[in-house]
Length: 106
Image (tube, rainbow, N blue to C red; front, side, top):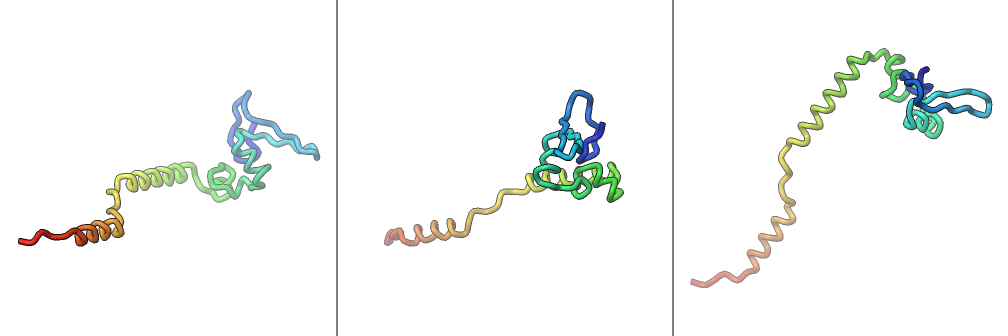
């Protein structure tokens, strides 16, 4: 059986079945899919992470996996960047405090 929203296979004994008042039956693999279709009224072919979208846009699974890897690499690079410098305001406050202190006469 396939999910009505994302078209993923639903393993036996899992998932949810939803029956509307007009006797239409929907099968969902997760609450994410159920909320997406029923509560948020999204269409499966408009949401990028679904297999339905990939089939409609003819995006292969390999291409999708490659883009995920690229995103992971970008996130790791952002984490490795050095911490930003202190605020300029803090530096000027310290300079002002030093200027206000009386200097010893020689």
